[in-house]
Image (cartoon, rainbow, N blue to C red):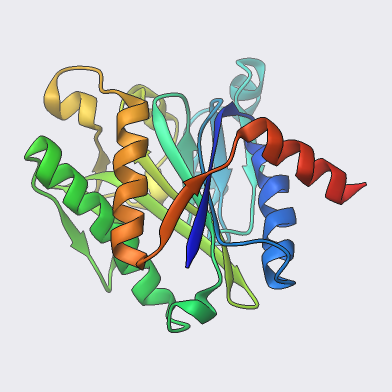
Length: 231
């Protein structure tokens, strides 16, 4: 099976959300192949289906004045932060081709980042399956996962802290976890890391984990075709 890769650069959260809805419907109708969107977001706080506004710790009007949006969405989980330096991935994939197993899907995504962090940075990680999703270094989350599924097709996905400004997580209780912190590769290695290289590693590990062949589509071509579909 093939996996289309589209790298969208820095993009507004709500724009990416609409792209996901369109892609998910296309995938449900078998009008496109499985697709992985890789991107970064402008600063935004999102609330999932179990999100509590009490987990936003700073005055919401103050955030808005600073240009930080607060967006409710249909992914699982509580509150999280996205911003530059964080690799966000949205797999739009039909789980009918992957045993119709949501837990296995999440487990494979976790394994991708466990492998990358171990093999490329010698960073030891763990998961807390059965309790929390994501990947942790000690008591700090480095990878957050939240998905939504419709007719076995996924949307939303993962947020991987590479060079993320961790101070911005002080605005919230990340994922609603009072007893956990957050970390990034930059904090753990002491230097800024190459986002493009990390994206390449993610694509390679997606191929291995899901037994797919990845190919990249130009973002401008992708967006033009998607807009044409919506007319």
